[in-house]
Length: 470
Image (cartoon, rainbow, N blue to C red; front, side, top):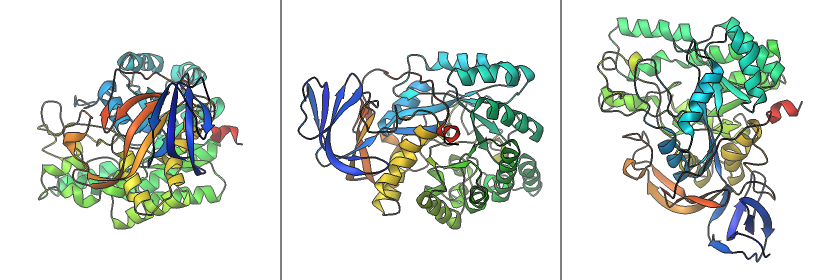
């Protein structure tokens, strides 16, 4: 067909529903034709490659302040460069409200940080930490109507936690405005109690972070969040689910017809609590500190079952990068005194897709279609980006990832593009890598290296399909 700017020729197109051999014709940044023998002004030979919808990482932290002065390793430039190199075309970072701050001012500040720096498209979730009458009555409703249609709340962390009354108030506004609520479900008081007990026993190494953030505390908070959502009749997403106990609460809710969605992450299929031991219960374990923490073999098996059977809608990175050495890093004098001061979070935006493909598709645990659903199509549907994103269809943005399923090589910090000085997945052997990432028909990464200047923009989003479907 004439008039095409670019043709992706000879590849195997994979969607969440199907796979087939076809050429993809692109015009003005959108998919204009899918067929055979297409011709255009430019051509990319995708023979032997899979052609996937661009990855959508729906849970990413970039340039986010901390209460103790620790500096996040990635801003929008390095974070989105890393995302693009890993096969992603859209990331959803957070605009974190600091207590006492206007939510609208918070969003404007993050836009200033992102402006001109994004190699992928971005779209902000809100984080509500101070649900004042002005925030709930004016700012939050106005922001939802402006296209910020999802928000996150925390059930732990001293500077982020909302009490039950506040959670219910936020859920009530979310129901009225049809905003999707993401919940970090860990019981704050239980974690503080366990932390005090461990410290009194002299158990302060990073390994004990995993014991303080016990799966019981995650299970309890998950059930409480579900109960609040049931009371208000609002859909929620339980994010970064780590194991069997919280999964069973989600399955219990769904069996009763409640709209509870679930997300898990690479750390729960590629790391375990043993990694937190470090070399010999030393500070090396701080590289693996995140919340909820990696669990045990039974939890990993449960996560894989959930990825197969539909318990999980989303597979996100929860990219929350901190350097392990140097000023403003995880390794600061206070962190050396107790695990409770080690900044929570690990990098993963660039390695999310390769890890799931290698451990899931290449090893026969999940299908290609399920891979696409978990990493692109479902995030687009759930967070109001579909069908513009997450789809290979006429009229959709030409956001595509060309994937070589045969390439085998290890994850190596030296080859990654994030701002971190380590990867928790160092040396992990991966089969299947992205070889080219296209955002609206323009190549933004090739063979693991970002290309060109930032081309991404901010996306306003529609109301989640979870509301539209009843």
